[in-house]
Amino acid sequence: MGQADLHIHSTASDGRLTPAEVVQEAARRGLKFMALTDHDTVDGIAPAKAAVQSFPGLKLIPGVEISTDIPEGEAHVLGYFIDYTGKELRAKLNRFRNSRLGRAQGMVAKLDKLGIHIDWQRIEQIAGDSVMGRPHIAQAMLEKGYINSFKQAFTDYLGRDGPAYVEREKLTPAEAVALIIKARGLAVLAHPFTVGEPEAMIKELKAAGLSGIETYYDNYTAGEVDLLVKLAQKYNLIATGGSDFHGIDSSESVIGGPDLPLASVEKLIAKAKKINPDLNF
Image 1 (cartoon, one colour):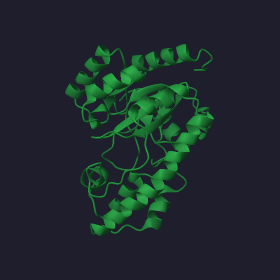
Image 2: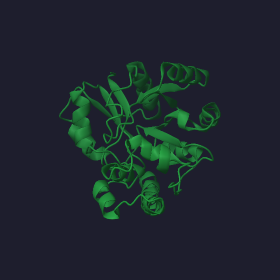
Image 3: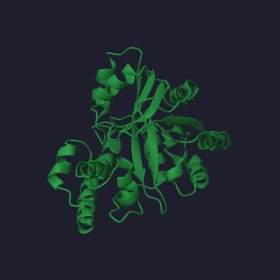
Image 4: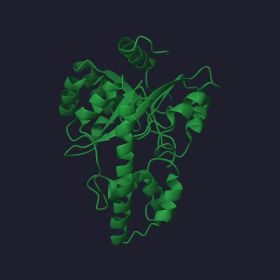
């Protein structure tokens, strides 16, 4: 177990716990640093900041996870220390939020043709006020017994190569990096092994202003972590990490699961303060 987790989701996107509950769980597990990184939304940051005031030993990094468009695999870009009140960032994220709704409806229609009959109203209930996403569909599939695990929904149906996959509006990875930088944040490539050619993507995004790569991640082997550490060193990037916690499936890593060195967080903070000397952290 680590003392920092820089990849956590809440009900603001597709997690099970509210932002306040995520903060409480992080504090219960003894974390010193956590980042709330909901998919394509920053709506959970304000309530998380309010909740963290009750836990003086825990510091919250405002973040976001932006989905991007690539020809092969999936590339997500994490943004840390962002100005989450900025109008341009919020406007872009709201567009993505709206595109997710149509995409989810398309996926449900494809699943229906595959003999997997999911009630749309149930998915809306699961999602609530959060950003509609594939995990909400996966949870509905789990409830009706069509799959045995949360991950199976993605490997067999909802992943990019799955028969029920539907594309939606996205930025390119470089555009996501630029958006995060414009919001005075630090961009980090999430879970690099979901990208077809990780090193090529890292090299491209380094030129665009990438600050780090997610190295310590849910279920990565020691060999995979070692490879990413070496890539981070090669391209002078910060080796970050996190659980990618959603709280939906028991196979997930718990908050603080990956053993992220505190030195990595300290490097991020130092770089963020260079960009924004007024950063109160």
